Length: 260
Image (tube, rainbow, N blue to C red; front, side, top):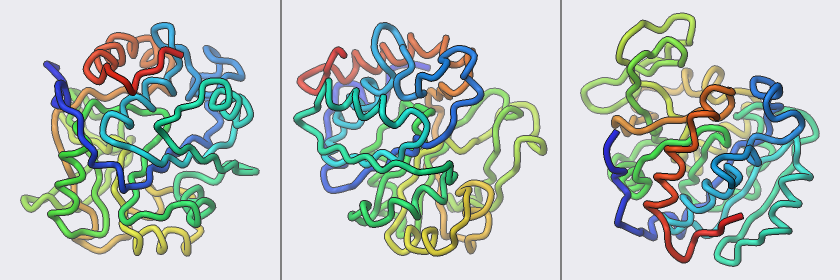
């Protein structure tokens, strides 16, 4: 991939949007590499993955970030205390047991105050322009928008089918995906308050499996591009993450950076 679409710009599009980071998983796929270290604190190029993530969100104007934590919550909270971010308001909510992506939203719903809320998986990174994503969502008028990316081989991922109007029409599980170029869910969403309320009421565990596929046509729209995508939840991907995240760090360099 070439230069990031965000390079050389700094927006404030997230200033009035709460961000919810889903980070309550057990990290079993990468436990052999990280041991008890939570994925957010995975070392990448001499820094934690969390440091890159906070820099990236602050670059787009983020002010208030809620972390839904579980495994390793105390270590992550200690990291926030040891290296505070004066430009960010950070709230942590700790699950007593793994609740899944949908359950985590329900558990933390009272902390998510904006409309919409930016929800993202804490173990995936997408080098996309979040201000363009916000503009897309506001113009579309849908209940939710999903950031999607194109990959050369879609078989390891859940795939997304999209109509000519940008509406998501189908979700295809990993086992049913086809080989070759595919559009996949990149794990970043803008969800309206009514949709968040519905998710909280359902008490379902998975956004991807239990909730999104049941929404009516047109409820979810896809913002799609050929974005760099990293799933740091696997050892191979974590090993490859250094170059991408260093590039992003360089692109967003400035007062928001913190080298911890």
